[in-house]
Image (tube, rainbow, N blue to C red; front, side, top):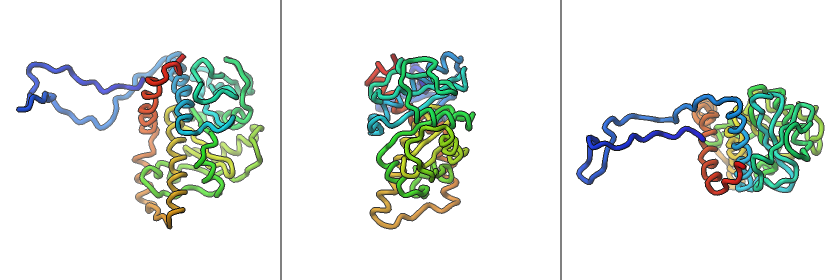
Length: 279
């Protein structure tokens, strides 16, 4: 679980207002969360598995669960050329930690019981190989991501939230049907580059990040940005944020730590409502 802000126990010497409100005797500013302690390899693997299984269920809540399409992967912290992924055909809303597959660089299942979505392997194996910094990548056929992808262009910086992706998402224009070959996966990885997201023309959207939490939250946020621009353009002529301010805002709202905390807020509610996800 993520770090929890500590609240000191009240003491008889704490100042009390006239209405009985007990105050902290030494008030301090704390504008961000405490850093998490490093985890062992085994603990880090479990952390990634739990967040990954929960991410699927959270995606189902957002409606990112159409048919058999969609996959999120998490690099194993010990076997770094292996990644964890959902089995083909199991609905996102039912996935548990024990359902996850560990897949090697040849597309073979090292842990778990398949089948494996071949498109998931073709796309994600290439991204994990091309981007050693990427722990997780997410791709589904979300409604607004698909709709925006059909336009074949990048998003504009229309809102504060959308600036998380300003000059930080790519465009893959070479649609060739379902991605079954890793060579096309590598072309997608090239279009992604060092950015956090990529729009796959006539296909959908994909995000990647240094944690499962960041990749999953950025997918939710990128689909939301697509939805926002579709609505804005349908209503009139949007007015983009100027380059200098969009760049500054990207630095403020586009960080992986913030994305992880946003995901954690969803994770806590999901686990409380559906604790079996951790089994």
